[in-house]
Length: 362
Image 1: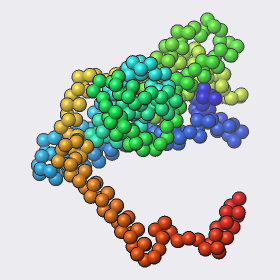
Image 2 (image 1 turned 30 degrees about the vertical axis):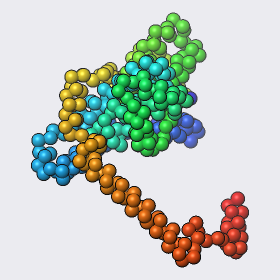
Image 3 (image 1 turned 90 degrees about the vertical axis):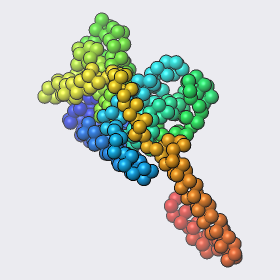
Image 4 (image 1 turned 180 degrees about the vertical axis):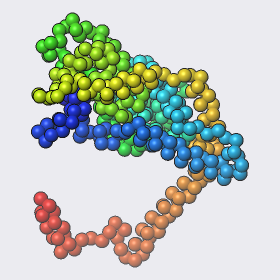
């Protein structure tokens, strides 16, 4: 089913009512986490501009004129830093011997988090550690927090737990992720059943090369733009154009004006370009410079011990105290007025009415 999505989504002839919708189209990934390249750029630029404005105002409130010499990060520089920490996830997964599902899921979580947040508010290091730990749970490959943090230098349990709810909230609590490596395996199994594809045409090293391209795609925005099946087929096309073409043509609709592989070419070409040109780790020196500047322009409200951080803590404590006092006052007022703080008891008529409504719902 996953392998068929690439074919169905690229061919307008398959959009008729007689064709079943792929399962993927019912997923939260399809509904909530698909963008065009232009949308991604607009989202990241908007987040960056808003963050710079807030941080600049915070600097000025603390010390007027202090933000004039600060060189804030732009959206591309933020992405460069995020990409570096994406490349750290496979290394950690190798250390812990986590399966590929955990690795791919953690990377997806990290990308999605920074479509709602900026690195100037939340540094990617601890967010990366949190997304990986969260992925072990959502993919049913759990590890104890103590075992996890004790094997990562300079990491405490709080570094992970303090961000876990924020990460989950930023993901809209949508934890299921559809991955290209699963779609590639589905395509590979399909190839074994095609009559015109002999074993000589599909040696194991073709699959091994294709899965490397799938892994390289995780360093890019491909999964935010294209479907897992499209990425899988493009990866196979990089490893063996002949096999990719034969698989695609096997999915063609009867009576089609042209081979289905020709219909897919523009989409696959774009994905192949992304994988080959962007599917590699960033330049370490460039990232180091970005990280150095980040220390000077990070939101002070998120830096423990800073004046802005302490002021924010005091304000939050005051709001919490006011909320508790108001709640206590409401309870006292209800008791003094002879009422029940948990609400008045329903009389017999009200009970009968509510029971009737329940019956009607059934």
